[in-house]
Length: 223
Ligand SMILES: Nc1ncnc2c1ncn2[C@@H]1O[C@H](COP(=O)(O)OP(=O)(O)O)[C@@H](O)[C@H]1O
Ligand SMILES: [Mg+2]
Figure 1: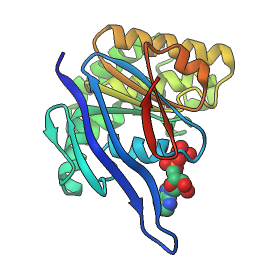
Figure 2: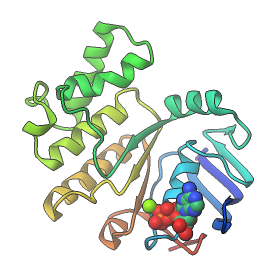
Figure 3: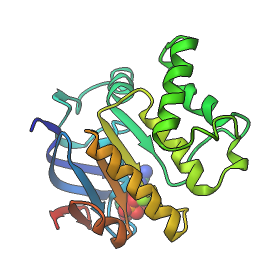
């Protein structure tokens, strides 16, 4: 399998009155088609790692290849291009725009990418169908349950067919049943070929993934 994520000895320091070593010598590889949970307590470095994996920030030291491309030295513009092409993001709090319908929310990133109206609508409808929301396309977020809102967010993340889905606490705002439902959906997406990386402090989410790594005090280990 070709590697999707290859981090070698990545460190991240935050400067300031007190320098913080948020990540120390992290080496982490994920093959294309894998599904992995990154576990760790609060303050362990999960969000820092998520920001680096997602090309939202760059490491202080070390190397990172994403889908075959070295990204540790790229500037903001190039990073955003890599990000748009490679990664679908899912967040704990859905990040849907309240005044837009489900379909319009899913269409928005396609609009930013310059996809024309007809193709945009078709891709958004296909993506919403894939997450089981074919009969909710014209609903606004407030008219949907939390689990349904997260499905819209997943449809939005996947509409441009990015190879990697990066989810930060995707079930953190959901009750147990809705959380299980979202994990089933992420597993289905993984089985259809997408690489899925889930960041969570919830051991139950970890248990639902075929591979787990744990981060503690900025250091990463398997298991
Ligand atoms: N922008 C920042 N500036 C300074 N310190 C930070 C910043 N972001 C995070 N940290 C520190 O880095 C460590 C890891 O934080 P974080 O990655 O947010 O952990 P987690 O997501 O696991 O809770 C913590 O000690 C936190 O206080
Ligand atoms: Mg965090």
